[in-house]
Length: 336
Image (cartoon, rainbow, N blue to C red):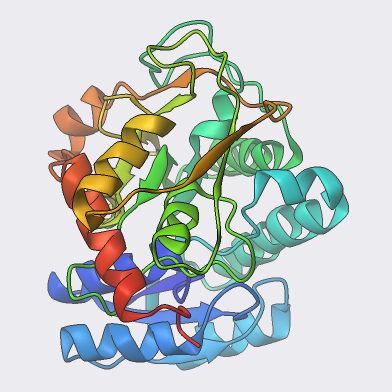
């Protein structure tokens, strides 16, 4: 039996495919390649020495999904597929609701039709909105501040409603903090299609000379250096969290929710300095006004995942920077 990985050619999806294959799981990947590249799929095969079926399709295409469920023996799903930029979601809310929420509804409906009721869902710390305190625990109040976060929150609620209606569903919701880094082979990594939305590809592209200067949003937050503090987690640690989540599904526990983070907060400037050490050169940056909706400090309490999944993030900030830099150096134009 195989795990269907939706969005498996994406940044987190491709790294998770590697760890699933390395842990002996069979996978089937579906991705529409809008924000990703089929080269990531080829590289996953190279890294692991294993092959698997890949379908270029959109999860909101019911006919295409049904064909996959007809052709493959699927017993569970890891659902990554979706649009994921906070800023873009503010200017394109309808696209986000259609792609993320409608896509998930079609996926769950087809799963139900084929009797597949085990799913791991890729959620996000954005569902916590502006938390009152840190570290953030799973039982904190939920209140997303942008359309991207609201799509994640809606999907979480849809999945929980599904379980209430039918207790045969087993659902693990993983709320990620800030994934960074790359596989240490340097063959797969984060490949933003245009100017990066996320800090690390922005820094690496400045370091490699692709961009002139890093824009840092806000220097007057109530933090140790005035810049925003986030919980950065190595993408390989995050991928291994999904392997643990798939194993947990077998226990048939209903709905389980876990934060995946390190439990440590680093500021934007901490990250810049760590990168400068790794690349041995200065990263040019300039301060810009705060972005609406950005919070000052956000980091996880990952103790539930440690206790119940036996999972812990072990790769440190220096390792995140080294691996991200190796990927950027080896692939200055991403997968192109």
